[in-house]
Length: 265
Ligand code: ADE
Image (cartoon, rainbow, N blue to C red; front, side, top):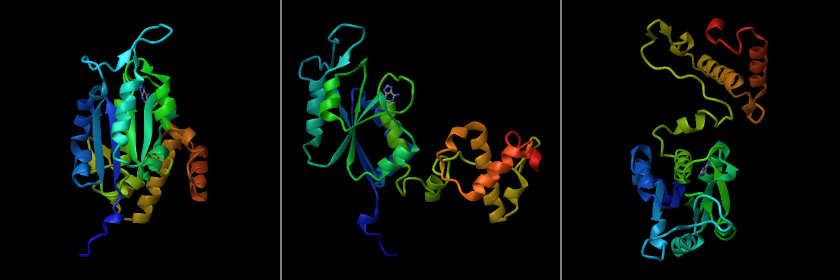
């Protein structure tokens, strides 16, 4: 078998600055991401912000100017941490995790998976980060959803996980990342495995038929039905074909279309 030239392999690198390095390493060190690291498809380096504090207590936060509750992350340790990481001369995209950031979604994951630069995450803790960090060190501010976490670490992990699985070779079955939920802009179709019947619940007959065209049609219709039912807001942005619109029209006008797949037979 011919060897694939190295340049054809995609890989992606992340750097994370955090005060909880163990939290991040624990997740990266398990399962699929661990295997991706071992295969050389994913590189993750975790940096302890406290290593860049200058006092003996390794302080990284301080009281807010103007008063108020909570502590604010200081700029100096973050600044020196970023400079130390960038000393290797590699190109980087610096991303700060915060609830004020641009909302992360599958399109953002796909765009980051094409990134040639390493991605450097700054994980905030406490009540916030000194605003000057954003002005001087950050290219992009990202939120993973409209809720407030105790820090950016989970956000960084969510992004790493969702980007890594788009890198060819990270998932066992390469098709699965491309085919499934959200990559078409709509929800995933229902999945079944053996047994064909469990406590009276039967697997839809078409899936046992071996007819690939019928199976593909059934899956597309069910994916559209679920999206119409649960996330109609996605349909406005999804890439839909004329046939998809026909199916949606049919689902909307049929009595059982939105609520009950089984009744249609
Ligand atoms: N830090 C705290 N809340 C966050 C959120 N929703 N997204 C990213 N980082 C955060």
